[in-house]
Length: 257
Image (cartoon, rainbow, N blue to C red; front, side, top):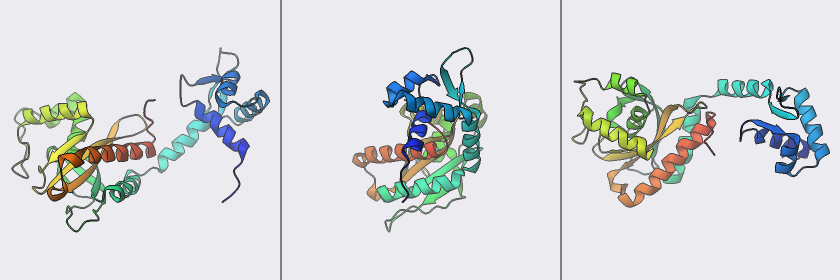
């Protein structure tokens, strides 16, 4: 492993300070927050400004904001992101932690499309595959995604008289009941599916957000009923939420401090 370069680390520390607050800082602000010598901070600011990573704030003498170069780097990073690839990596990590099947899915009309999947390590597992579609209202990922839609888009999918197919006797087929369930999902920030798409499996799902904060996918943990319990649910909810947040961060989302 190469040598850690203090000057580079300090420059990056300065840039990362701009992630908080109103996005502007002065040299004294940076000195105080990083506990660095004034001369060092002045030299680093001068260098970062010369390279367009920082720019002076117009009308606010001595204050700086992020420059165009940081935007260009961020845009190039975003262009290289692949939800399926990133989702597969995060799903693998979550599956290794809990030993259960983990999916990442997106909304496709009234269906969910699974874009990533990692199997359980147990002999008894859920049979599914990336690329498969299921009715959104029958799945935890689907409920999470439906609950995140603007009202007009949800209305378009749940128009009066809309028919909700049943996959098991536990599937929700009444739009009014589904709307009530989605309201609960919005409040909890977590979606549950209890034997609604598979009579032998229950799932918990959490939202995945992009850099704008929009919900673009959901991550779920699927557990056969022989290993499902109310006592374990708290652990599964926490793991799903953490996995979804990890994937969100890979997509450029930054949670509010």
